[in-house]
Amino acid sequence: MTDGKILVEKLLRYAKIHTYLNPRDEIYFRNILLREFKLDEPTEEKVDLSYIDKLDVPDVLVEETEKYALENGLCEEGYQNLYSTYIMGLLSPLPSEVNRKFNLIKQEQGIEKACEYFYTLSVKNNYVQKTAIGRNLKWEYQDGDKYLEITINLSKPEKDNKEIAKLLTAPKKGKYPACLLCKENEGFQGTLTHPARENIRTISLTMGGEPWFVQYSPYAYYNEHMIAISNAHTPMHIAGDTIDKLLDFVDFFPNYMIGSNAALPIIGGSILNHEHFQGGEHLMPMHKAPLMHMFKEYKCKAHKKVKVGVVDWYNSVIRLESSNRKEIAALAKEVISAWQDYTDAACGIYAETDGVRHNSLAPVCRKVGKNYIFDMILRNNLTSEEYPDGIFHAHPEYHNIKKEGIGLIEAMGLFILPGRLKKQLNMIAEILCGKAEYNEQELANPENYLFAHKDMIKELMEQGKAKDMTEAEARVTDKVNFICKNILDNTAVFKKDMEGYKGFNRFLATAGIIQ
Image 1: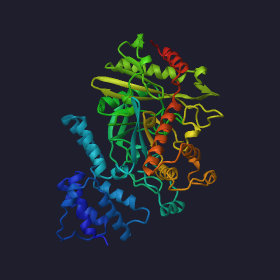
Image 2 (image 1 turned 90 degrees about the vertical axis):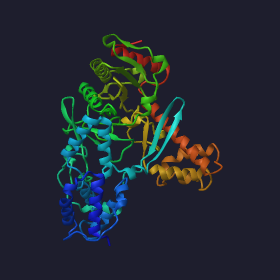
Image 3 (image 1 turned 45 degrees about the vertical axis):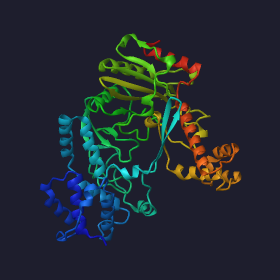
């Protein structure tokens, strides 16, 4: 059995060292925890708790808190994560204090130190799931002078059978908060279908003259993965005001990049009903790609202070750079306006069909010294009989690796592949090296776990068996790399051929950009 009185002291020590609990408040929070744990008095036992000072993450204390809660009937089985989140939130500074301290550090020591404080708190109070994130599989694929980052996402926890069973009998309530991004999540107790958010902390700022806030992603895809979110529950959109908001963000966070999904189904990310952007400390592979040589010399007479080029990247990206915020904002807005209505039948691009809009773009902004840089990723979500999931989407032959939407992060070269692939790719490698039987007929059965991969497995086998598991794994990984590269090629609205080059120039001319 877990000793609740000792656990109280462990949590208090952790909070003093890691989540900024003021020693003046220690007695108060000891009594709060005693009440929460249904204890009458603190322990008199002297225990060495010095190990807590060196903890990078609170996992061991979270586990112990959940165990104690179940043992003492403080929560039902399946709700223990909600309970431990509540306790970690209780021992975190109030949102107002986090904002006060963040802005004070920013003013006195700079934005990097302020972000370090905010991110560290988000890890130490168990909002950013650092241990879970560490389970993700990651590697880089070097493709000439370009590269991709590829991850298999294993961090998000799967619900167990007991949790799933409880969902059937859980009481139906009104939708509050309205979505996972809403400001009202701050302090929300959570349900079986909506994660607890007592430990979330956010920083308020103004973007485009509107109230916004930022938080870190709990299951980050890259270092210091930050989400900027509108206070208002309003749908995603791409327009001139998007540019102003992104520029306001990088003026506030010059150490971070920021970008918006394209705000349409298929190409617009997974949450379209609440305006938000994705940013953070990480520079994406696209950011490090040079300009394409044959597209280098561009100019815009109306905005001479802005350098313009086409990025040597898989999809179709225009790069704008200038130290003049007003000039780069104006040209970025003109590119958005020109693309929204652009049709080019020779390249298979239609701005709308039957009144349904298809063109959008993903603007990505960062600051290098005094220069603002916009990478404008052109997107289109048109479908056809041949490509019902999207002409400029991952084509069907690649759906075994990635069928989900190719959003902003993947468009910039960081692939987030589904967790199922860890097991499936290992099974394919075993077939390839002869550790498991290759049965083409069984793989053709839709009920087979590897059914989606049957064509890829056949192709790999036709190239010959691998001599051992190491070689097999390398060949499977090479195949995944090849597919990810081709998926990005699929998303290019202007292909890397002469017709595509001509089409790109035709479009740029409509925005006043010429060679």
